[in-house]
Length: 536
Image: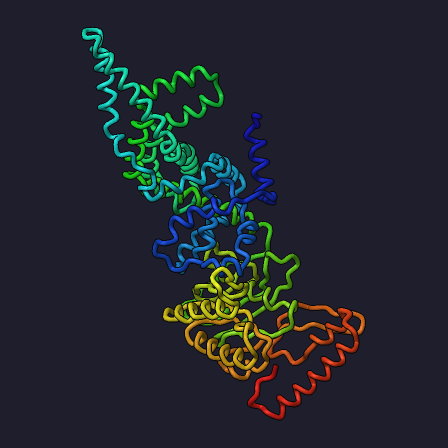
């Protein structure tokens, strides 16, 4: 149904201000990231860390993009932190521009909407230049066609040649249907080249102050030569869906006789190989603009600040930092210089949420120059976490062994400086004494070259790790009638225990609660009598 430009602009603006709930096909969205993640980069967020930080939910929260290309570039950006202050400042300027300049944002969104089709996800197949399957014999297709025409014309003087013409028609028919599936799969991404070209052209005409758009004229010029050939492939799809079947059938016969599919495919494949760099330049420029539009929308919905990157300090400074994925998240401050961070507190008190808050602020600072906080200052860091590890039963690995392998990877990574390790209750799959010993050794080793944020239920670790780690805690209040959490970060170690009292509040029989309390006092007394023995 036809809609006016003003109606389309109003709809795009409404979706920008509050992105609607919609299905997101993450395997397709991740295609660009998968295609380029092997390229050299400062850092790529691994799958474990992405999962720990609720990456898919974070992407959904940020995804105010208009185009499929923008979705793919936003996903890649979130998983590819930068250590380039200049590039991050440029992106900050782009997002700020779209947040304040409503008319220009609307026109940019109209241009980007040309790539709203699901088929645009497959443009990533063209970026490498060699993704299209090769049909070796297609180079000879023009010679086959010329031979067919020659025998057909020569038959008027020598009718026996028409037998050869009939044989060639049979060969052309077999070639057409035998290779049709491969050609259709190969041309699928090329059907969107026209939309990519027009989106890039329209953005270029807007004279937007975005660095990637400044040098787009040359790549667009190279891309236009492929678009004219791809238009033929698009025409067939339009004919099949919009017009009567007879013209489409006639076109099929013409294509079989003249091997048009293969001739056009061969030339398009050659052009894609020659101009892959130009295709990628347009693709990434379009995606960059869409990412900036989406981040501008996120900024309009959530309190935020621009990050400050320090090359001299080694700590982390956060003011009123919160996790945007947690409704009503209580903001907290944190200021550390040389020391790392050790968190204690009971379950549900806010430790893990705060750890994710630190990770998300660091990640968003170095990807979209936008922090969910009132202030953020830190050097560049690579974020690595271990929060939601699980057993690997198909490979016969227990939780402890899976965690041990993951932590070994962290230790090996410390050969390079500049990491932020977020570690939630290390080695909880083993006994208390060995857990404390192993955790102390690992955290001390990691902290020597990186910033570590670790949580634990083992109070002994604070003294064992001081002064390299500064202790903080979260606590709850338990009364006879209720219990509640304030989710506020407090300095120092946790000095109270409420786990058994919470059992009473949850309705456990009094006999169980009293027995647990008595045994707890006995164990505490034994621990005090033998200081060298870790408490259980």
